[in-house]
Every structure is written in structure tokens, then in C-alpha cells.
Image 1 (tube, rainbow, N blue to C red):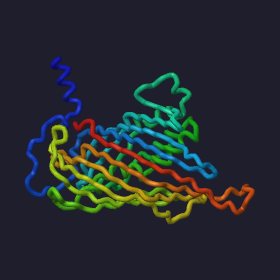
Image 2 (cartoon, rainbow, N blue to C red):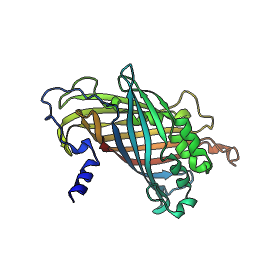
Image 3 (cartoon, one colour):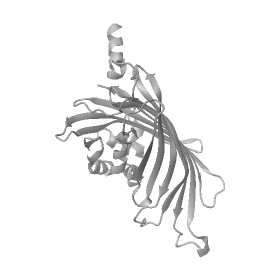
Image 4 (cartoon, helix red, strand yellow):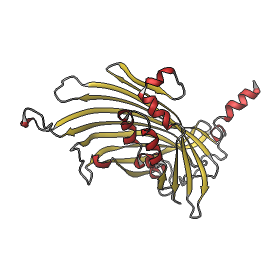
Length: 322
């Protein structure tokens, strides 16, 4: 029993060790740390609800989606200029979709079954597990470049349904992976004390569909014990909108994000130099405009607009730091 208890406590590594120092009484710098050889396991859990109104239909289409990704980050080395090379490895994935109260699609890489042979999601997500992406960070913890995305795209596309692979190929681009490692952009640029606030603006490129613009205000609320760690509890809120791309879409389709809002809480551990937990809520209206069908009987019909009301809850949490 003592052996089992010891093994269980060690699963989370440093997260199960109490902070060595008490919460600081003066202003402190929030700085990411990348000790060579450290391995962090992180999970991202997203739950999304949407109601989509299609042209010509009065009843909206309701959809619930869940997606869970678990991946490891290993610090390979420190560069001569003070930057770091960090390797990301996909460990597991889970996804499910319900439409109109009926389960339409589900996959869990940790529970393979014979039914997976006929599941298009299994054919796509199964290829992601074990894939590795390498990050090259500068001395300020900004991502200089990413390697391995092209190889992942080829892996997703090989020997499977193009329709099943298309959504993931659209999501897993350079911008997506850089966003996963962008936590440095949310931290203050100078030492802060409880009560201090700072602005953050993030622009997320979506190719020919434009750019998603997120404006936040972060506030260092207080020092708080999160698990066994002394953490800075930060509250944030902001807006989400989109702006057109510099190059129009060749398909004529456009996306406009309206009335977008974000709020959440994040816990940063300055001793470990890492954010150990973040919860986030997002609400937005997304309008997708499609060009007029050339076969339409009435030229006056004009472009078709599909509107979605989207509500998302996202939790990014560390499972272990070793």
C-alpha cells in the first residue's frame, strides 16, 4: 500500500511538491522557465455548443462537440543565444459530436475498438498520436519557427478519407501550433503586485478567411494556493472579432465574428515558471457568407449567409512536471 501511494504521488512530479518559498510580499516578475530535460504533460479540454441558422430554414441546427488533447513538452536544449528547443508529442486525443441530441461521431485513442475500423475519425486522429512538433524559442520565449507541421499534414492525409482529414488539416497549421506555445504573450512585461492590470492583444491568422483579433485585460488578483503551489491568480476578460484577410478567398467565402467575448482565470507558478491551470469561456456570433450559387433560379437571391451562435468552455491544465 505504501508503494502504491508513493507511485501515485509521483505521477504529477513537481506539482505534488509544496512551493519552497512563501508568496512574495513585493512585486514579482512572471517569467517562463525551460530547464533542459524537463518534461511537462498538459491536457486541453474543450466543450462547444452551437446553434446554426441555415439559409431557408427557420429551425436552427444544434450541435455539441467535445475535444480533449493530451501532449508532452520536452525541453531538448538551451541555445547559445539563450533560447530553447522544445519538442511537443501528441499522447492522446478524444472527440465527440452530437447533432440534434443524437451522437454523430465519437473517438477515443485510449479505447480502441473494432468499430474504429469504420470510424473516419479514428483513421485521422489515430495518425496524430505519436506525432512530434519541434519549437525553436528565442531568449524572450517567443516562437521563432516550428518544424514538423508539414510531416504531420502528410501523415493525416495518407490512406484515409479526404473529407475526414480536411477539418484537422485546416486547424493544424503553423498558426495553431504557435498559439499553443504563446503563453508568454499573456504575461506582464514588468514586475507586478496584486491589483495590477495589463493589456494583451493576440491576432490569430486564419489564412484567406482573415484574422481573429482578441483584446484582453489581465489582472493579477491575488496570491493563491492552487493544489500545493503558491500561484498568482489572474483574471482576464476581453473581446473577439475578425478582420478580413489581405488576400480575398478564392472561393468567395468570408467569415465575420461578431459580439465575441472572453473571460477566465489562470494560475501562474513563478517558482516553476509555468502556468499550471487556465479556464476560459468564449461566446461569439459567427456569420459565414457564401457566394451566390450560379445555378440559382433567382439572380436576386444574392449571397447565402449561415449564422452560428457559439459558446465554448476551454480548460488547459498541467498533469505533470518532471
